[in-house]
Every structure is written in structure tokens, then in C-alpha cells.
Image 1 (cartoon, rainbow, N blue to C red):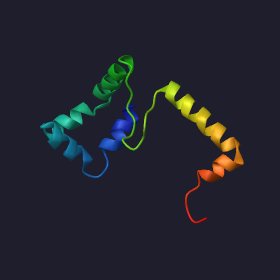
Image 2: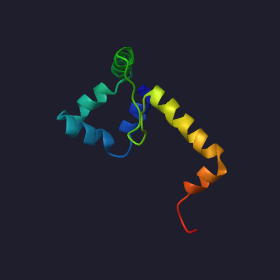
Image 3: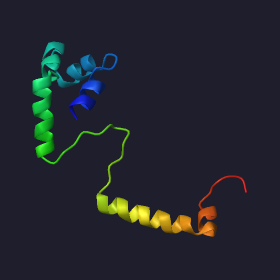
Length: 90
């Protein structure tokens, strides 16, 4: 988690934008991203049962994921059903 946060925060002017959004100075933001502080934050998140994922990812409940993959596998195992799922010129 620490490396993902650090990687994302150090892109272009992101660190300055995050600092502005939080209403803190860039030096405060740098201190928050210091290894010791960032590691403590990510450890706290992990122990609280939370994780950091990129915004472009979608998180689903493991039970829901299993159900969706079972339904998809069943639908795709039948060629006729799979063909009906294809959109486009026919």
C-alpha cells in the first residue's frame, strides 16, 4: 500500500494538488509521505481491514465475484448462448 500511495502521490503535480485539497502545505504533505509516517498509516489501514486500490479498479465482495464467474462460465460454455451475447453486425 505504501508504495502505491507514494507512486501515485509523486506523479506530475499530484503531491501539490493533494496538499491543496487537504488544506495543508506541501511540506506537511512531504512529511505525511515520509516512509515512517506512511508505513504507520498503511499499517493502520491494514489492521482496520482496509486496503488501497487504484480508482480505476472495481472491488466486489468475494461471494459476489464467485457467483458472477459461475454465471459467466455457464453462459459461455454453451456456444448458442455465448453467440447471443455478442453485439455488432450480424
